[in-house]
Every structure is written in structure tokens, then in C-alpha cells.
Image (tube, rainbow, N blue to C red; front, side, top):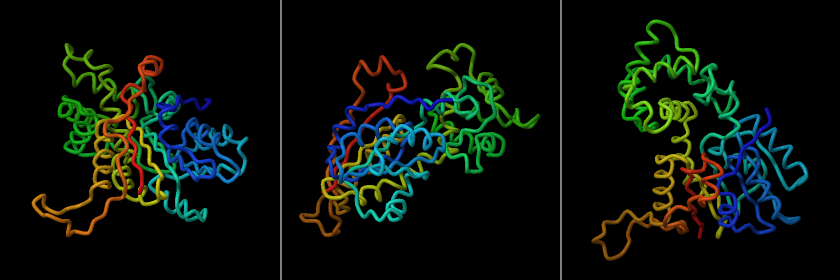
Length: 311
């Protein structure tokens, strides 16, 4: 299947990166290379783009799409949490901008055998990096009921989390839950019939929660942000597109902390903790997709772009 993914908030992100022709930029979630293509198109002879993605299909697709840029573009299969080591391996000490477009790509959702979508009946996989061993099937069949409840409640924000977790455990006592179709049926049975039509497909939130857990998406984000800001050169910008309220909260809080890291009580007349600001938050409120984009691409509706600039 061809790697297709519509880049969300494309124009807005490129504008906020303020690309310099001779700058060094990192796309930490390369995907199909949509954002990267626009970045590379604006680079001169001295400019460089480093694309990172853990998905083999994304790396291959982006490699083809960005082939015409030659040595300006370097593509690495890795997770953006390892950006520092990637840069060290390339003898790069600092960057002028970085982009993260979080969540799952259209290609991943639409490739049935990847198991990301509740629309197809296939094996429970959901791994963004297929080199890892943990799958969605492992989570569904091996996690304790209280852990399943926590994941579905926190990552899926599903009000029926407790009942869904209970139904999953009850079903796997009879036989292992092996496919997305089986999981769909279990979730459906756990939600009262009169409420199944509310808020979209009944499996949407649970599938999202399991995917986030399988790929450690929130942990990776939370553990990476401080270091990514450190990697920026003065004036460099970190642009992050989120699709989930928990992701957005993590980014918002990390950016605020980087702008104002002082831990002194408000009553202190001067700062004595010695923590200095790393820069400034450019987006007081997140940038949202314009109405036209939301109408053309339903997956963009929950997207939010936040931007931080290093001093």
C-alpha cells in the first residue's frame, strides 16, 4: 500500500518554523515526508534536514519523496526521543528548528494488517515500530484488569472504561482475544445499547488508549521535551502538533516550565533558585486548523499546534 498521509497544519507549521536557508532542521515524526518536503524546499546549499521515524514504511516512503533533495536530507529510522544521539552520530551540535506531528498517520490507520483501526478485522498489533516485541494483543491479553481500566480511562477518556476492562478480562478467560474484530465485539457488549451511537464508534476511545500504551506515546513525549528544547540553537523553534488532550497538556506544561522554571515562592522579592528561562512560548493559545482544512480532512479536527522559541 502506498504511504499516504495528509500533513495537518502544514502552512501554519512551516510559517512558525521560520526556516533559514542555511539552517539545520529536524522532523522527528517524518511520516510520508509532507512537512519535510516543504522544509527541504526552503533550504539553500548550506541547509540540512534530518528526518526521524520509527516506522519502516514511513522511512521508505519519505526516502522516495525526498530523493530529489540529495545530501540536504538525511533520514534515520529511530524514535524522536533519541534525537540527541542521532545528532551526535551526524556530528550536529545544535539545530535551528524541530517539528513533531504526533499520533498515528493515515497510512497506519488505513493499512489493515497494522491493527490500528477498528474498521478492519485483523490481528491486534498497533506497533509503530515493528521491531518492538510488545503488541496490542499482549496488552489486551496480559494486563491486569485494573491496568486496562487505567489505560482506557486515562488515555481513552472513556466513561465506560471500568466495564470495558471487565468485559475484556471475562472474554479472555474463555479464549485469547486475537483480532480487532473480537475486541470490537467485546467493547460493544460493554457499552449500553442506547449509548453506543454517542461520540462516534464505540471502539474509538479504547483503540486509541491501547495504541498509546503500546507505543509509550505519552511517556516518550514527556521524557523528551526538555532535551529537545536544549538541542535548539538560540532563536530556534520547536513546533509540536498534538491530537489528544493529554498530549496537548504535556506540551503546554513543558513549554510553560521552560519559559518560567523558577521554583521560588511568589512572596520572594527576587529569584534565588537560579533557574533561568530557556526561551518563550510563542503560542499563548494553540494554533488550530482553519475551517477549510477541518472540513476537507476530518482527522485534523482535534489538531493543535504549539510553538516554543529558544533564547
